[in-house]
Image (cartoon, rainbow, N blue to C red; front, side, top):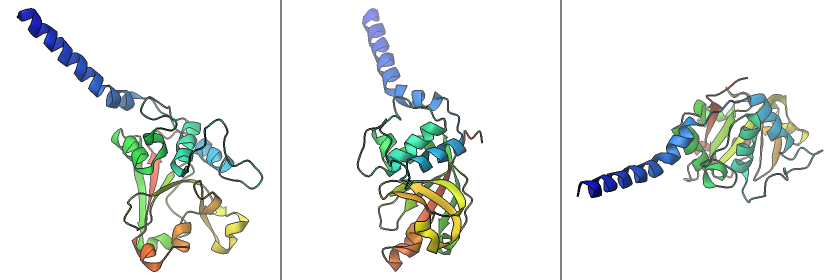
Length: 206
């Protein structure tokens, strides 16, 4: 009986170790982050008119805004692991990536914009920061892009003036206004409800 109890105990301990392996593995993953390098990647692969739009090292997926942000994070120094790697949900979906990285303290909210704040030309964002959007349609987080610079935007967006710009996929944009959705909303109700978060790596090296 004693040996049976010990065997059961060993089985329980083993099962527990398997169940908790995922978060422990993610939590101890070592990251560094160079936001300038990440932004350069996002600029390179966001349909710069003179360059190819997709990095062929990655398989194409539909609605790939978060997929490209994840790629840029890797280019900036983030290390993939079994729980955050190409094509799984934590890599490819806005809310999943947000949950993964905030759970383990890899990113923080640097700023949040809503209402009239969304009309600003500049933000607290730095190159390599992530922009996370709630379009005000009741879907919560719907889109991600990356801050890639500031000043003069691409000629397509020259009528929006100067200021912070971002690069993104899904609807491909290169050096577009960070608040493009606010400036060109589907309707006044959406404009009133929009929220944009600026997310910053806690592992920043530059």
